[in-house]
Image (cartoon, rainbow, N blue to C red; front, side, top):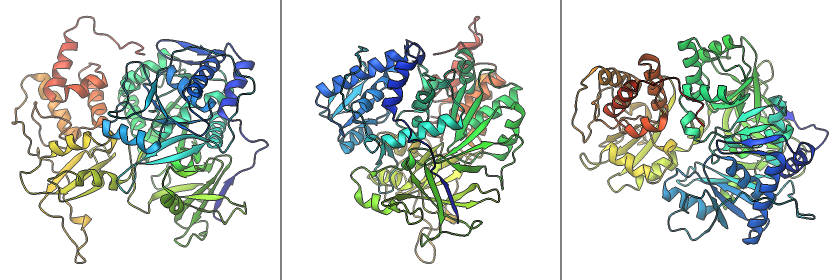
Length: 609
């Protein structure tokens, strides 16, 4: 039978509020979490979460209600989330950096009753919802307070939607508990571990960071600005300064780390004992190069609909990816995985098929979308468990000779870009709303470094809209990761003989500089010439002007990180991610580099909370 079942366990995993309560009694003085401003013991974290739960109840939040959490990365964020769970409500993470339209949609669609924010933040535009700011007060546990049940809703994480709007995945307390227990066991976590909190709370990967430390009483470490740790040099400095032992990274970011260590002859910090990586296909050469560091690597796979994780693969030393693709590994505890054909019948062990996943980590479905839930969550007719369901992932897989699964691709239009599952239909719908666009199509391609990127095509009359205008239009509606790196205007789409869009005939982004509203200005001075040449090469262009907006040329966050890495390696200057992003042009970036070079006290970056 083509099935991977890991359901056996002696006891059900402890729910997150219970884990916190347990450690507050067993190890009350152990450090639970820290950021640049403060650190909390388990007793203090439990008391602040209890106080937050009481405040939510006093504000009228009832069990089952949804509470928005729109906060920067910090200890306060963890307190807010644990307080919501303690109140038997469900948290809905909303990224503070999202456009106002996106924030308002998420808040309205999820039906949040209250919004927890940092003190300096405001509520979503025109949204009539009460806000609450953490006050860091503490309360002892309430005797007889209601406790969460395994099937209670714990959080709603939004993912890209194929119909043009994101959809909220409803994750249960049992799902969070199962993930935390599985991750803790797979990573060999203990009370001395210090786990870096790197993923945005609105991204499902954060579930694998926030909760596993609570299983064995470890410490979660929040950087003051997680985006500032995007450049590899800043990340390595932080890992060293704060004795980080565990780190999870998206594949594209991990590729940058491997490349940096190989190019500089460096090594991972001595405190680091394990790296977890996933979200996209790992380059075979990067896996081979990683072997030289003798640092354990765990490859993780899983959609949000299975509480972010369904399988792990501890990559053996010297492992060469099968057909250039790392194994997806084995199902985590409490999880069932089946490979089926188009009739949902099990395929032979070595045949290709669609992956179906069920078990304790399975989400309830999509909030307010019973039709899509019924389509994607189907009856489990293989395990013999009454009422059990399975999630249709749409992922094409096959079972390797060693029994583990290998990812082959998608059976639909969904793509994976920088760790995010992206439905091109959502981006196409946004482009279609521009008045000058007749029709839109979004697909993917590989950039100059081999990483997946989004390419958007629109049909529109010449001179009615520029790529820069389209990019600005999308930035008002979509998160940055949904904005295509390249936007190409066509008079009409090429069609097949059956009058369908001919994808094979769509033009690829040209190497020549696109038409921009800014006049081409060549570089002057050594730094400008070097930065311009590097930026053009990274963007796959013949040349770029020093005043050109790098974002309009397709310079996404991954490009910015590569440019920062190039400047550090070839110019010897360390630049921060946000300042490079804000500089937006070759002239601006070169000026930053020159200014830092002129400072006599330039040295190695500090620990950089």
